[in-house]
Length: 147
Image: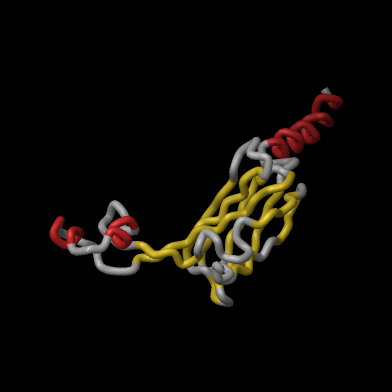
């Protein structure tokens, strides 16, 4: 009986560790665009080879934390938009908008604009996730001018 009791604590620790993302990474950091914290948005870590799960989470007041990110090369993407105007209430309101603005209207009738363009410098960058805690600060800038 003493032997069984001596093994129980080790078995319990192993069981708890297996459910807590053992062998995975925790990535956190700050997110800025043009030197300003991104107030609200979403960050995703997608396997660079396209195989395996994507992990994502919210950006709140310029900070994010993602848990249980499998190790390996990832592509890191930031998406952020904001409400740019009042909710549109009638089809006549919508009809007065240009096609460009209609395409930016969400299902709630609020026009959304990107606060971080998809092609911003520093967006869609590669990052090697390792086991354990690590920091990745995402410092994004306006896209380079197109020629």
